[in-house]
Image 1 (cartoon, one colour):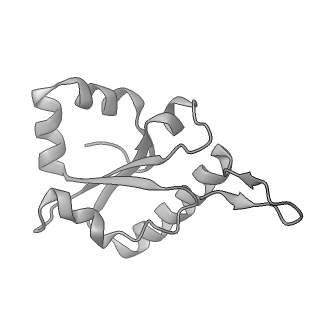
Image 2 (image 1 turned 90 degrees about the horizontal axis):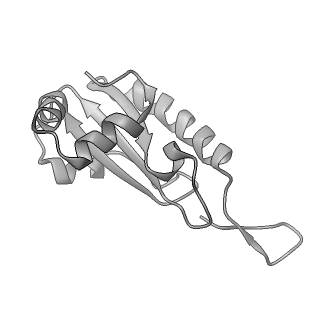
Length: 122
């Protein structure tokens, strides 16, 4: 989130380096607490290197399996302490394979852009 300088009222957005350092630390903690985690990465403006003030962080995780619906899985991942707003997509390995088998623009973008912090796509 925007941070106020210690001696000014000017707001400053965290740098891409600060965001990615925080993501790597967060990812290490997920490895320790999520044995089902296969891979975790980021895509979007941070992966492309074209972030700006207000850029969010797009994260994708691949897990072995889950008994929760895909759109509810991110509720179990405490990512609200990252320094910028984040969107987290959590796919099972089977869903990830299906997504890429069917192709489409989103699947191609994930394939081309995702920078893996933990593991790699199955």
